Amino acid sequence: MENGLGSSCIANDERWSLAGATAVVTGGTKGIGYAIVEELARFGAAIHTCSRNEAELNKCLKEWGAKNFKVTGSVCDVSCQADREKLMEDVKSTFGGKLSILVNNAGTGFVKPMVAITPDEYKFMMSTNLESAFHLTQLAHPLLKASGAGTIVNVSSLAGIVGIDNITIYGATKAALNQLTRSLACEWAKDNIRTNCVAPGSVRTPLMEPLLAIEEFVAKETYRIPLGRVAESEEVSAVVAFLCLPAACYINGQVICVDGGKSVNGNL
Image (tube, rainbow, N blue to C red; front, side):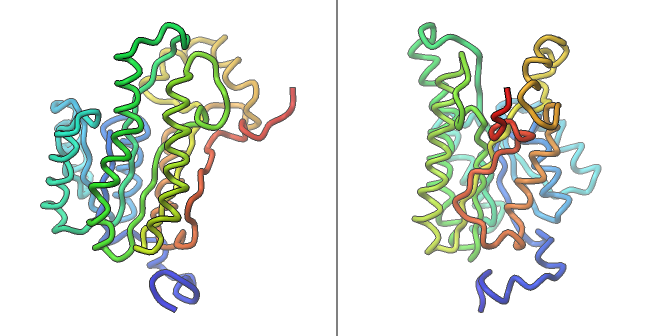
């Protein structure tokens, strides 16, 4: 059988390579997004990423060039519709109208009681975390379909699966992203497009570093994690890369927690 099914999944080097693949990773200049760009590049993919900060983007592109990674980039605020449309036009031009992989990674969040969240904060969170992934996925569909075997990976959060105080709206956007993943996995399979999602727990990123310097916070955060520590960005990016590989050709519609076991731990 062909097209990534049946006997075509017999183990060989091509199953574990992204040579010739093209990818878009949003928010790729720091944290988990940066690690995803590097992981996909090591597997041989050509990547186009984006950032709101032009200086930060250029710095990263220079670093990746020095490593001989095939990475290009655009300045883009994913919360802005016009920026998203421009990003995908850049991608279409860069990759000749075909796209193998879309990673919806860019997102935002803040800790605040539900009753204190303003309408503007709510709209910004929704547009950045959910609307951007929805719209970019829409725009990417013809490019993914044209590739013959497209893959979408959404970066969600454990907060979209379990309730966590003071990040209610953030959790709602991630829960919606989880369901978008499941629905598209069914709707777009006929176009040879797989859709999956990773849901990290606490990860050591620049945003988290100030909190991780506080012993009390770390003790509370790791108490329910069987592995006893927060994740490194590379431990999340490795799962994203696996889902993009031909070896993962029969994985579709899954939300995979990368949380050290926290989501399944019922011990007190």
